[in-house]
Amino acid sequence: MKNGKYAIYKGNEYPIYNGVIENKNAIILISHNKNDIQVGFALSYSEKYMREHNFFTCEKEVSKSEITEAYKIETTAIYKAQKYYVDRASTQGEDMVRIYTSPISTVKETELYNEYKKNGFSDGMKFEYGDVLLYKYVSVNDPDLQLIEKRTEIDINKL
Image (cartoon, rainbow, N blue to C red; front, top):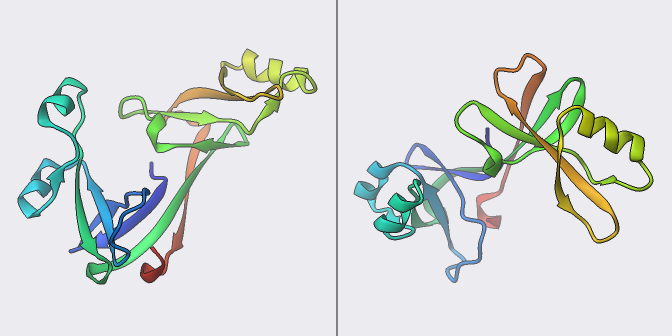
């Protein structure tokens, strides 16, 4: 499941770092492949820190002229005929995704809120004015789940 901006660099797809960088003619690519260290990527964190937290990330600043393609991918989920948001940080293991609702009022839409809770959704982010995002982990193998990726091309010079 993908969400975010991606670039093709030397024939491989990489997520694009979303933060600000000084060089306006370059972008930073992110990789979770240890072999990319051999092609000029540098560790994003210390090896010790990544080992302790069980992840690996490296990055490389590349000139925009070295990018052959750039695009944004937005993934949404259809679950039991309802549309939900999905974010890539919400994956639990390899076979689970987290789906979440639009903000729901716990005051005005009590029936809807209670229906979600009855169907296994949990309270997520709460807003000052009483709304809440509800979420649920769902197996990617669930026959009621369909993940839809929408891809939009991005002008490389506007990255």
